[in-house]
Length: 491
Ligand SMILES: Cc1cc2nc3c(=O)[nH]c(=O)nc-3n(C[C@H](O)[C@H](O)[C@H](O)COP(=O)(O)OP(=O)(O)OC[C@H]3O[C@@H](n4cnc5c(N)ncnc54)[C@H](O)[C@@H]3O)c2cc1C
Image (tube, rainbow, N blue to C red):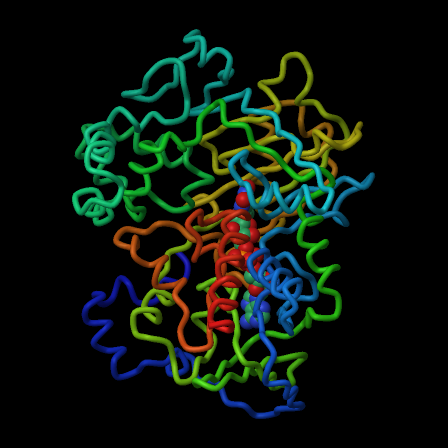
């Protein structure tokens, strides 16, 4: 698990005691202003830091409402974890190496897509299953013709096998409500503990790791049981029938439109290193090509992942609660591998399918380029948790060899058509250092603390959203921060 600097070593209580003396992230990673090259001294301006969907939507709406806003971004592009690779492939093919699916309930993404003239097209559902070396079809599983080679599973489905073992807690939510103390107490139990308590065999815990590979990117012993129970109680858990969409032409079209509308108000290649604030305003020290620049503002929205914010110097520091949550927010591991083949062999008659659920280290392998013209095509994989971590330790060449080999086991003819491939391991990306936030054991209260304004500073980012770990959540957080800020300015 990335970036969990302190949680295993000291308790929350002793940490809070310690931080009352420290109060500043600066003391954890000291930074000296050695070379301030300019002082952009418009102290009435609103600074938004981080041009992912959270920062973009926030800055866009502030700008639209007539506020003087600039958006500061470390990279030379907008979009953050929405990342469509185009140059790596032939024939104008592209693949989503970051955020991919837009669910039907992602109303904010759908609304902006509509406003900006973008279409969301449905992806095809899982049709193949390759587990424990067995080749099964989703059709066969659903009809009961095929069975999963795992102890304790129900026939007729793949996803949601955990539900029957946690029924007593699902009922508890229904009887007492989501915010009752009895239900909230489930946050102190891990998913693994709850499944064991509910009588689930080891196989069910193992299967959960794979069926929830996209929602949960770490091991079940680190994830809050509350998350699993609520997902099942709300009937929002992923199933064979979940319809997921993707933005036609590439998800990066959405952040690119926000960026185009903001134009020169986005300042690229500037990494926030230090933020000083008091009741009157603030100064951001950003680094551009090794030189420091000082940018003044009245208020600021920080839309950075907690996994990078924990390395920014904050003066005089945030509250001890917020500091603790920034330092300890759990994140998972995710790697995607995109492979270009000269023929779409997965559509052939004897193929296991075009979207395969698997317990191999690749976890999900699917034809990505369904909306793009052939004959070439791209197989994309999504791997997470311990598998992503292990693959992440390998060189690019070895990661690719592993992916090719796994594909060969699933589609024996695949090697004949292989052309090239590329990987993206988010935990080694310097501007994320993680994949996306997860509900760790005991972290239920983190979201509110992470989202709460402090002085002239407001907070956005998927980890501060109700629907975390999603593009929709990122936008939800950006719009919330914008409203909080406007309310304060107009009070
Ligand atoms: C592999 C993967 C798959 C995913 N799949 C899906 C999916 O299918 N559906 C879905 O809805 N969501 C998915 N997500 C989640 C989604 O991508 C995120 O929730 C969302 O994009 C986060 O947006 P954000 O603005 O909060 O953060 P980010 O996109 O990370 O934006 C933060 C920005 O801050 C910048 N930055 C970082 N440090 C600094 C600094 N010091 N100074 C200035 N700028 C800085 C970064 O460069 C970045 O642009 C996926 C994510 C990953 C990684």
